[in-house]
Length: 68
Image (tube, rainbow, N blue to C red):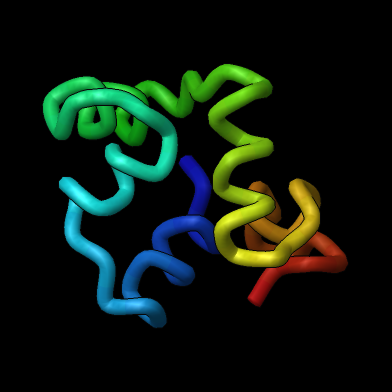
């Protein structure tokens, strides 16, 4: 759902546990959120702050201006 978010995860060599910890949820909850694409605004903000990126960058899809 969020290809650039997953790209940041890989770039920073983070585990699913690390990604879950950043937003304050369990690994299982993180996995569910990545499958559904349903992150809360607070969780999105936590990722933006952690990675130093704008939301548009983390949520970009192929063909979007911010797509990597």
